Amino acid sequence: MFILKILIRNAFRHKLRTFLTILGITVAILAFGLLRTFINAWYGGVEASSASRLVTRSSISLIFSLPISYKEKIRQVDGVRKVSWGNWFGGIYIDEKNFFANFAVDAKSYLELYPEFILSSEETTHFLRDRKGFVAGRKLAKRFGWKIGDTVILRGTIYPGNWDFVLRGIYQGRDETIDETQFFFHWDYLNESLKKTAPSRGDQVGFYMIGINRPDRATEVALAIDQTFKNSLAETLTETEKAFQLSFISMSETIIMAIELVSFVVIIIIIVVVANTMSMTYRERTGEYAIFKTLGYRGWRIAAMIVGESMFITLFGSFLGILLTFPVARIAGRMLSNWFPVFNVAEEAIYMDILASVMIGLLAAIVPTRRAVKIRIADGLRRIG
Image 1 (tube, rainbow, N blue to C red):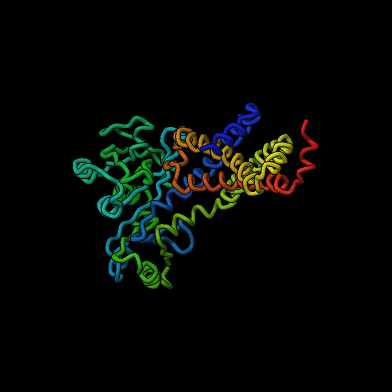
Image 2: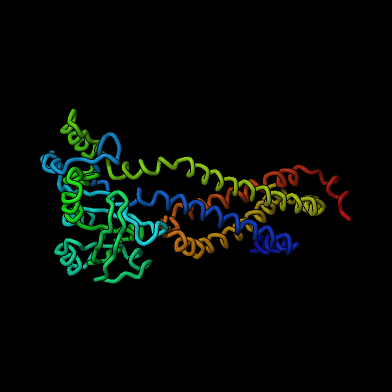
């Protein structure tokens, strides 16, 4: 307790300098935490992926379609439990800036494959019965003020024309990692319309979503599916849902690396700031350390005082930075909800904040501690006065 009092008094001996140092640490840890949260949000869809789901698409590219007839052959593959299918619709609501993911899916099998999308039994029944019905995530419905029964018109880009839908359900995510900004409707509605207006585009799907019995057989089942359609006019590529999500993120890997680099640069800068503060402290207290030595204090005690003061300042600022991360992340999440449906502070980000704080406190104290321990008593006493 006595040592703690000394550390606190020493830390706040120069109040302005200590305050500015703590402020710098707080801002740095806040920035570091937000950058790590941003990276976690980028991988949000990957983390929410299920190990018991596969995705089958064209082996050439996602933009090439597959015949709907493939569904029966996929069902016959050993290990397959459920098959669903869908198309990326790419519709625009009022204006291009109102971007959100919208899909045409086989409604019944899709809801069975994705139990993390929670709908009431009444909403599910109404959705399945209405060919023009659609389901929206809770955040998406709140964003545009949609209510059950509202008619929503999307302007098609991939499938031209104005498409009208009726909101029949608003789903909630099973937990905070689930995207609540999606819009999905009946694939049959899309397919029937295409058969009338563009027959060559009918009975085609963009991807198959496959539920498997055992996650440990995912690779085996994926290979079996692809082997089934080998040398056909539309060969397939089957991968786990996580790998499918990662294939999109890999396109922006350079951006992720740049953000990670910036987050570590922030830490390096604050190490320099704290190290400068501790060096100034050492120069001011050189005479005091010499007096401590004359009183019999060993080097490890002097080192403990310097390191302790550095750790106290750093951890105090870091604690404030971590506390501020949560409300600031909530505000940022609301502002970025169009691009990052899941923007939550992960435990990993907090652990990295704590690790960075400890590292800053220790590294910043190395040089002044070494000098204080090695300084001779006579040299230290010359600096008094």
